[in-house]
Image (cartoon, rainbow over all chains, first blue to last red; front, side):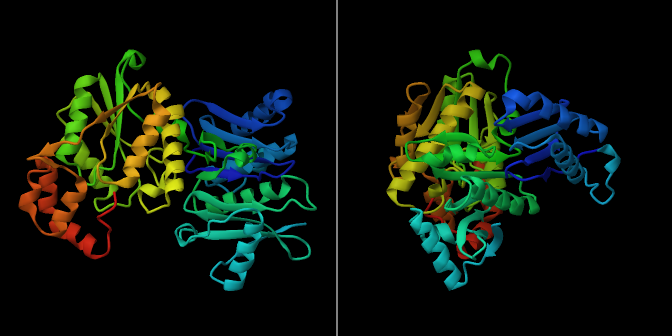
Amino acid sequence: MEIKTTGVAGTLESSDIQIMISKGTDGIQIDLDSEVAKAYGDQIKKVITDTLKKYGLDNVKVKATDKGALDCVIEARTLAAAQRATETSDKPELGVL
Amino acid sequence: MDKVVDLYLNDSSTRRKWKHFLEKLGLNNFSSREIDVIDHTLGLVDDDGNLVGTGSIAGNVLKYIGVCNEGAQPGARFNKIVTALQQYIFNQKIFHSFVFTKAKYSKSFQHLGFNELAHTKQAAFLESGTPDVNAFLDTIPKVKDQKNKKVAAIVMNANPFTLGHRHLIELASQENDLVYVFVVATNASLFNTDERMKLVQAGTADLKNVFVVSGGDYMVSRATFPAYFLKFPDDLVATQTQIDANVFKNIIAPRLFINSRYIGTEPFSRTTSFYNQSLIQVLEPSIKVVLVPRFEVNGQVITATKVRQLIKDDNLLAIQKLVPSTTMDFIKNNKEILQDRIKKGMNIDGN
């Protein structure tokens, strides 16, 4: 899967997470901003990484601004951002979730 | 539940309501210079139809953001309006945004993933999204073992590149191992960004330790320093120049191991002389500011302003003494295009 543009999904409202995905050169690099990063940072990054890998993306720059999202929300937002970045929103692979 | 709505400020009653709302929150600057650049304005209305929040977009700069927290969870409305503004620019494929705000609101933006680039006592300057300042710095060429080298920087608009610019760069090139020439990226001058960049490159091609690069959004750009391109009152110019100097000091210089900044003395432009003062005040002593007297030919100071005036006056012969041959050739070959731009209203008295 190839990243063609920058893709964003999610909001900055409570219980949500905003994910911005753009082309990377050095694996999956996540810049996470979260008030609960100390307790859940690793878990949030793991969910994002796993979702991207399942979608076939290995070189990605990710900016994530978390407002206390649950894992299922993180997955959904990551998938939506990935679809937008790869311009595949018209043929969603929901099996990834 | 609050709803996000479009606000059309062309409508005078909407504009009055919007202005009244912001005035209650302590925002008072509604000069046309600020308002005219707005591309779009959003509002937040509560269940009873009252305006409880607003924010605007000008290019990739967020402006006039204000919310009333009465009867709502603190922060919720602010987050909602910023999200809505971001969504609006994302739809236009703009993924990188700036905000220039009062220092006390910097933290609120940082909670939403904005990264503070600089602050003064009054103001803060933040960015969000991608490509950010780190991506910008990654694209700039570097040399081996740069941190042990003498590295200098010059920021110039070079509209167009004159013998004065050449003199300044030459001096820096002799006194340092490496010189970065950052060319102003904002395209608001008689010579467009591409032309200015190429003329600086052509005019310094023989100097092997000089890198000519774009100043991006971070050095004298419309985002950091709008007063360079438009007339502003003095207190705003002071704040903007301090912000610009702080971005250079906090972020640009350390990453590129820049230890000195060369500037030309400024006998004419009030804004630039303000800028020079701020640079000295902010950068010294950690970064040396080298103030170089303006280069003179036959007792007359060379300025790009004069060159532009001579282009307007169609006096190419007089330009010959002021610019290197590379710039001269360009002006000769493109005289009509340049004069046409002036005729169409391009301001040549500014910077």
